[in-house]
Image 1 (cartoon, one colour):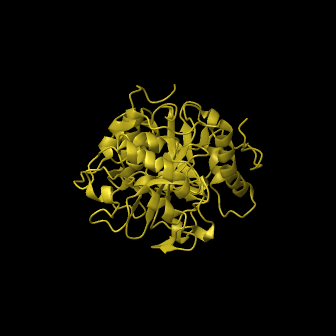
Image 2: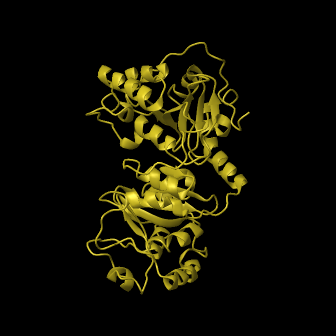
Length: 395
C-alpha cells in the first residue's frame, strides 16, 4: 500500500461511473481562459497520441477536452492540448510537452511507455494514466517512474479520481485538502530516507549542454583554470553560509566556467587567468545589467527577505531562503527572476520564480532528480540529444 491511501482520507465508496463537475465561474477557471477544445483540436490530439505515444487517447481525457481544454480543479488541472489562439495556453501546461519531458529522460527517471501524463495536482506533482490497467497515479518528478511503485497516491480508475479529487468547492481540512497538505512532507521524507549521494556532473551530459548553448561572442565556452577552481573551493564556505562548493559544480568548472544558455545562465567564477576580460576582472558582463558571477548571485539570494522585484516579493511572506540552497544559475526578465537551485540535502535540482516560496523545495515551479534532467526540463522546447538508452521506459 502506498504511504497515502486514497480510499482512507477521501472516505468515499467505489464508483461504477462518474459525472463531470460544471466549472464554477471564477476568474481563474472562467471558460474564456479554459474553453472547450474545438472538434478539430480533439481530432488532432487523438492523432498525436496514436502517432507519438502508441495508444489511443484515453476516453476520460477526451471528455475533459470537451468540457474544458485545460480543465481546472482545486489544487490542479488537466494538461491542455495546444490550440491556436487558446487564451490560457502555457507551453509548460501542455500535455504534449509533459509527455515528451518524461519520455526523454535517462533511466530510471523515464516514465514507462504505457503511461499517459495528463494532469497536475499540488505544485510539481503529475497525474499519469496506466493504459494497461486503467489506473491513475500521482507521482513526483524527483523519483524513478518506471512503474507505479513510487506513486504518491493511486486510484483504481478515472472515475474514482474524478469523483474524489475534481469536485468543488473545497474547504480547508476536508479530505482532499488534507491529502494535498500531506504530499510535501511525504516527498521530503522519502528523499531524505533515500540518502542520495551528492550530485556529480556526468561528462556524458556535455552534448545536452552544447545543444542548449547560446551563441555569445562575449562568453565562449571555456574551462576555469585549476587555480580559479581552488580559489572558489576555498572561498565557498564564507560565501555560502558555511557550506562547501557542491561537487557537481566543481566537476563542471574544468569543462565550462559558466555558460550562456538559451533562456538562462549557469553562473561563473572569477578567473584571473581567463581570456575573457569581464571574467578575468570580475566586472559586469557587457550589455548585462545583472551579475553573472556565482558568489554574487548567492549573496543576493540570501539577502532577499524584504526586497521586492517586479511582480512579487522575492521571498514570499518573508519566509526567507533555505540557507542550504545553492543558486548555480537562472535568468532575469522584466517582471520575473528565475533561480536555479541545487539542494545538497536531497541532491535534487529546482527552478524557483521570484514569487515562489524559497524556504523549501516544495515551493519550486520545476523539480528534477539530476543535473542533466534539469537542463532537459528547462530547455524542452529545443532539439536536445536523446539519451543513449533505447526504449521509452520499463515495460
